[in-house]
Amino acid sequence: MPQKQLPALADKLYRYVLNSQTTGHPNPRYLGMWPTKLKLRWDVGFSMAETDLFLPLQIMHSLSELRRDWILDGYPLMADRFNAQLGLYLQDRFDSAWPSDMVNYWPLQEFSDGTKVNCFTTTSFLQRFTGRVDLPSDTDTSSRVFVWLSREHPEVDSSGFRTEYLANLGKYVDRGRTFGYPGEDKWKHLNSGAFLTWALPVLTEAKPNNVDSVVNINILDSLFQPQVSEAAFNDLAVPVAAATDLIEQVIRSGELEKSSLYYERPSQFLMTFARAVEDNRTACL
Image 1 (cartoon, rainbow, N blue to C red):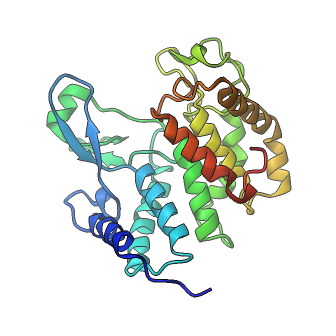
Image 2: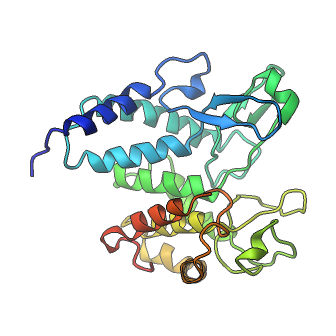
């Protein structure tokens, strides 16, 4: 079926997204992305535009699906800019302090003293309030990267990330923990067997891990892509079953808000769930 022209209002919205992509910035890690408004939780009355990988991934996923049926002028160049920055995020895995098997939400940024950390800013003013936040890599961002690479470049795993993701995801499972994350006990028991959020090789009370319901839906979505072999899926069958049970528990209880630390609105749970089950793609759900 030939692609169609977008209706006037949809075209206006698309042009807004197209023209909002960052094409010039003194910090090269902003290029090809869309800025996110970050509100500091400290009482300093300050917010700023920051760059991360997750929001642009969501935008590109949506536009890629839209492009199947509709004409999106300017999409190829926009995708090239995004993919160039994604390539830098994939390279960051080998240069940061975190395990290389997962991708980070924030870029690896270099400070004036040569220190490199995964953070949202190198602005000295903000460092006084936040310190040098070195965010661990996470399974949520990684799952969306996996889906993007699987759909856009299904034949070749040129970065090696898809192979590494599948081989190591089983390390980040909710088992053997002696302490949970604050608030987790409101909706689940410890050691549920589902997937953890952060790619932390060692758990401490100073850096605890957690289980998030929406993160688990995103991970399940990644594991039902056609590029996942039967052998790779079978290796993860136990945490997949545990994650599925956990999602069912959340839906039956209706406690959507309590089950997510990072997706504050119930609509985000429902949207993520609906996307995962679209066309029966994620069969376990």
